[in-house]
Length: 173
Image 1 (cartoon, rainbow, N blue to C red):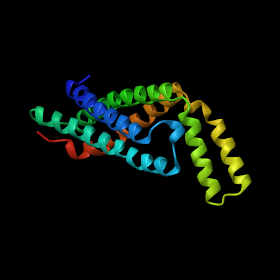
Image 2 (image 1 turned 90 degrees about the vertical axis):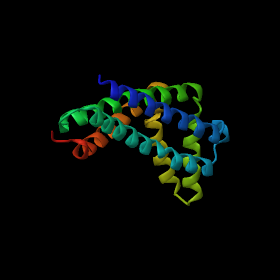
Image 3 (image 1 turned 180 degrees about the horizontal axis):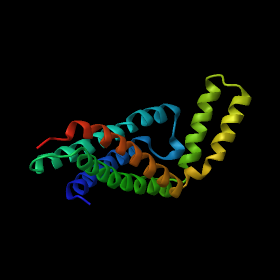
């Protein structure tokens, strides 16, 4: 693994961890979760993707700066994808740890979502169908399920960032 990928992956992962735990402190205990807090937390949680993008692009630009001569598209995206994988592992561990510490979060989030549906006038059939769909995905609200989901999701998002950024980072010698 490229040292630049590892360093930027770890730094970016750490920034995401700090922002996640700050957001968790804002949300409070799962039993205190309200629709308003949940919507705010979702919006703020999207900052994670901006941090991911910035970290990967910075890794790729740092690699380019350190490289004498040409930087191929392949080598540029390789650095970005490696950084994305380091970040993905950190995010997966963080999400898994969060679910292990807060096993009731999944049920609290489900209750908030269903309450919002009810408050917005959704029919009983629509709420029942959504409840059934959510129950079928209960595996995801476990530490392993949440970790696996975010490992895959962050790796894919980071790879897409690297593939696009590589177009602009490559350099002819």
